[in-house]
Length: 295
Image (cartoon, rainbow, N blue to C red; front, side, top):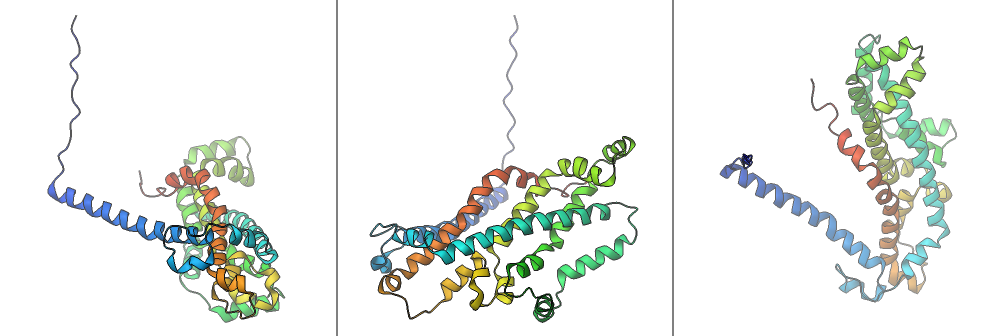
């Protein structure tokens, strides 16, 4: 009985140039890891350390204590800002991705009237801004200044996500949509029952990018919410004002542990993003490559 001869898999020998390039890639990756991980270790160490030892803290805690974390979690201003950011992020994420995807869908069709003109309009809006003053005057005319809804309105439009949606929709098989139309599906049914399920990777990517951008953004809040209306501020603005405050009326404990409280606030504000990331990473990986290959 003859035995099959196992063939060893062929290995392509790397050239000296490939080896050098691999070494450079690993070195750059290691550098980025150091740049990201070391500051995070410092923040983590400060958040669980006693402020008396702050001058000697680098990457390891000293004087272990959870007093700063407890202070942040029991601070009514922090909790209110956290809830404001939660509401802001949910509303903006839902509204932005629904509006941008529904705007991108007709633009992905060849028979869309005035397609080039509309796309040019969106690109101009993405690249050029009318400035801060017109936006502020508009929010004041709408009586939305010093409310969280001013930040919601300026955060909904995201032309970059619209372009991602459009590119994805252009790659969907037209036969599926034609079959759905033959079965009597309306345009709304076609979009939500056929197009959306087929586009989950790009939706997951855009939703995650929107969540991260909205959660961390404080630019709109700085423009439309002043310090006298702190109840309306999102978490990013609360954190910005905490890091830049020079309040001389603080008690002795807060003066000693101010850096620790700031680090604890930063650490807690990262938790929602870290909890979401593992659930969408598999979709993000496939969504980022959409449009890279045409065939």
